Length: 420
Image 1 (tube, rainbow, N blue to C red):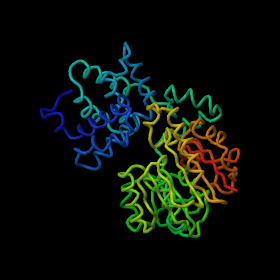
Image 2: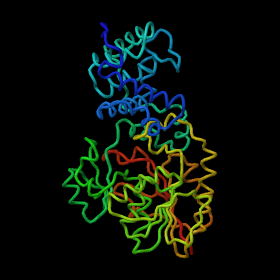
Image 3: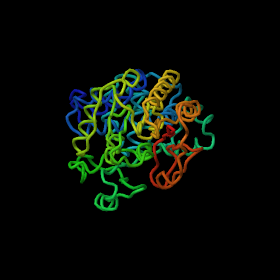
């Protein structure tokens, strides 16, 4: 291959690929969440479409990593070390060719400059062998071994469907400020609805450019993530507490449903985003920066929503990095239990508490609910859930393989109790 005489980072497209490589390194070597790693890594890339491309490459490489590695290993005489830079570059090159359908010549021209010498020649040869042969990716990604073992034990009848649900990036879900306008906004945005106040769109273009964004008619929120707040019903001016509230989707839901909301989160930075979302939507809430385990309210609440810190494995179809990061499960479950016990003491007589996690791990969902005995269970019914979903033992449980005919859904768990 003839090389350009220009410095590598002056070759158009190379900075985006270098950024994608750094994103993979941040997730796989340092264990950073992709959302946290991305801003500083992408900051130096001027074009928005190049930043989006770098993220898309990283997402697809992480989503299909086990299968990309299988293709790489089949094309080499000896397996490359897991931490070899040539393997990482081949992952992003093959993700572009096999998942993003970018032309092979463009992938080679922007990928090989990330390597030198022997590794460059090796990567070129492996990429050519894979893309010119009959090799292809399977219909659904192969789960990383740790996730496969856990979910096979927890959901033996669902693992195949969960894997299939990860095959493509998810559609875009919106929650409306005014649920009575669902049909109007579905038509205006060209989407469809699976629940009152919900619109689903095929992912396309900048979110800020969609009709209704500027006036705060809706906010982005996965359908599963909207369920916990729905389980509290309408507020009619009563007091509700949203714990671990930022970035604010559930706070906005509660405020739109007529609750007088206190939104608490210990992250001042994330609370700034929550306040921006409130301002854009024209809704109001009392935003508090504090830790659930040290804060004390001045009066009890009629409703409390605890969306607890968790492994976030239920979001793997939109955040495939969670498949490759190892959560400290014992620490998380201890924290969840402590938050749940403390929150229960803040509930007024007759009040309702909802506990939720965006996790596929039973330890964070069903096991936590079974261990909690401070309040009376309030079983969740099928009629309270979006179209196509059913309750499980009085709880809400979803996974990425559900609603496949509509584009899927995140994995979530929610349980509900009342204070007599």
